Image 1 (cartoon, helix red, strand yellow):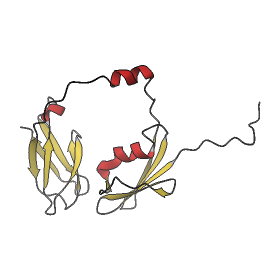
Image 2 (spheres, rainbow, N blue to C red; image 1 turned 30 degrees about the vertical axis):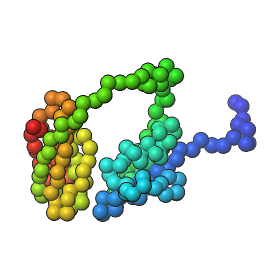
Image 3 (spheres, rainbow, N blue to C red; image 1 turned 120 degrees about the vertical axis):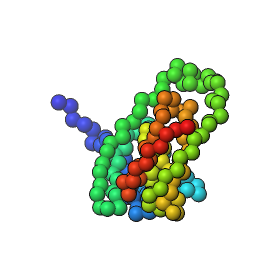
Length: 167
């Protein structure tokens, strides 16, 4: 068996820690250094994809993620690096595409959510925050979700559920 040279460094995976606050905002660190949100914004639960993209350098390196909830619970997950596209795939992706039609948004309203609560839209098309009075206004583009006739709005904290028809 061949010995490793003394100068070789051990492989390490960056540690990303998300601390969720009661108001739904999140503080993010990567290896102990604060990862700031985009200018004039705050990290929220709905920011998780962007946080992972940023922390993993656009998925070029794997990251170990720890989430610490405001209720004291926590969980961890490993987000592996994604294979980088080949030169051929990059050229195919750079070809111009037809412009997408203008979205035709459908509005849904529901009550019973907590003020500022993170609301899931299922099928999960995104997240929105409840207003100061606990109401929510969701805009859905039916062209992005063909065949979907109904959505469920789920309050992540209150557990409130509302089923709404699209259109």
